[in-house]
Length: 406
Ligand SMILES: [Zn+2]
Image (cartoon, rainbow, N blue to C red; front, side, top):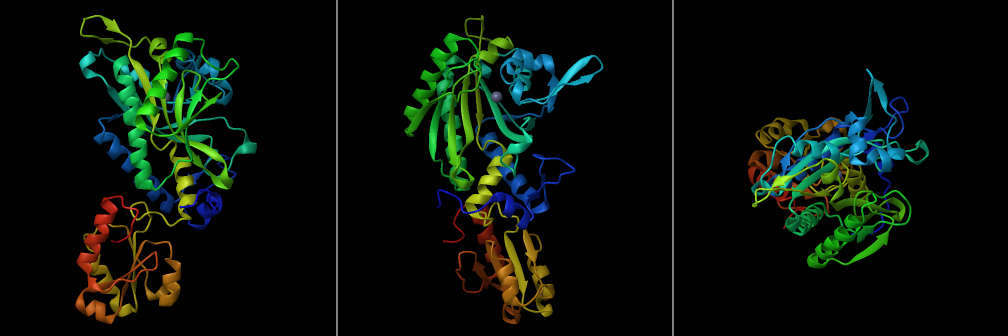
């Protein structure tokens, strides 16, 4: 697998009908076309499924909130330069949210919690906004409207290290299914300057916890000053972006600050109130950046489970068209039938070069109810019963396999 991509996701995004932008909608506000929407939806459903299995509960919360919410969370004091200006509305000020954490902290405190309910894992694939300057905008990597794969784990101080390690484990599991290789793990620590909360105890405890998590996980890492969140240090999983530029895709963060700001608590075994710790984590980061990376990693030839079209069926002549239709009844694969009206067989095979599986159906295959599969990697399989071909492809898709065949 290549370390530095030879593809530009902006160019491929347009050529493959994945996404586009329009000056009338605005810079940094891409829209998703049907093929790109399939990739995005499939990725989102995959993430939700592994989160559900890992004990996360999903919520929805609005993409905006009152200015007071962000004053309490610390964003207004430490992160305002990256936020859209507030909107005046009936004597209140409302802002597009720069992160999901404050909403989730409020959701946590909607009712009292016992220590027995912890860790409480709240996840959301939610919208947020960043007031990027127009000069740096482009494609899906620098956008003003972001869909973030986010979650917050509310836990006891004793549970933090295990929860952070489990989050790192989920990231590694997702990377294996997606074929993404990190270039490095970064322990992001505070640097000089006033953008961090003035809480010496936070900055003493939290980095040591993350060092412990990294050491236990056995991944090599580098500590870098000046890259922490304003409320705490984080583990950043770095990938090679376009032109070799390094970018953060996934993060695990430990936060002692916002639980205090929102006065969160749980009732401990001693019957007294205790302060939970928040672990912020994102498995694939923003959907935009994740898909941009996948486009560049694969040049549009996505793993079968993510591919907009998983199987292309090419009837050699019109006579096999009804057979192609009948064959596909009931399959859940994303199939496209490309008939002779779209050109010669050779031209249609070339047009489907990014599709993982291509089934050619001639008179003999139609008569035998067989298909001859061509794999994207160039392999041509012997004709096999159509039902078996569909079932085998379905197995590779369900397994989130990177391999197309045995
Ligand atoms: Zn957060």
